[in-house]
Amino acid sequence: MSFTYEYPRPSLTVDCVVFGWDGLALKVLLIQRNEPPFEGQWALPGGFVQMDEELEDAARRELTEETGLGVMYLEQLFTFGGVARDPRGRVVTVAYYALIDLHRYAAPAGASDARDAAWFSFPDLPQLAFDHDRILKVAHARLQGKIVYQPIGFELLPKKFSFTQLQNLYETILGEEFDRRNFRKKMLSMNILIELDEYETGGPHRAARLYSFDEARYRALEITGLQFKI
Image 1 (cartoon, rainbow, N blue to C red):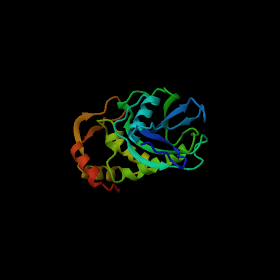
Image 2 (image 1 turned 30 degrees about the vertical axis):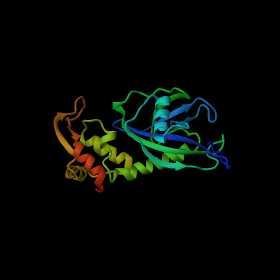
Image 3 (image 1 turned 90 degrees about the vertical axis):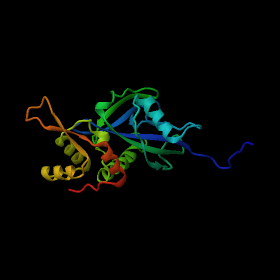
Image 4 (image 1 turned 30 degrees about the horizontal axis):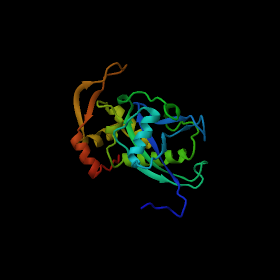
């Protein structure tokens, strides 16, 4: 038996906010649209959900098609359904976000309906299409909230890192500076760091010791929370 609907149905899309860390700055992955509306303008990777497709599968597909990147972890962020958010008609989008270490991935490359794909430093971004600036603000607020109760550095930092890199990550995301000794004391008290018998190389100053995350302890804190307060 086939069914028909009395009421018109809105279209459904997915959009992906992908944050990356290069050791110095927080980055956002954007694509340059190759089709109207907003042709030539920068936007978040995303597109329409197919009728037989799960939402997260659609997000992964669009991200790979438009940028060439396939991230391991996506988390659903929010649903955006403003009546006038898309000039093509009533379009509701489900946004996802991801955190990645840029050193673990190849450079993005625009494909499909994306003319180009590139990383941009946050918050120095070009004007975005649709309501993607709002989506990005919500994602950044989620990131700031998440970093104080969940150890997200595992996704953003390289496998081996210095305390300076770790502190720089927290300061950049939260927009505040921490006392070096207090930050170190707090992080060590969580027992999520493994001190390595390795040091940074190639720098002009005294080589800093490197650390890695204790993944078992880290994953436990993902569940229980860390309540990061300096």
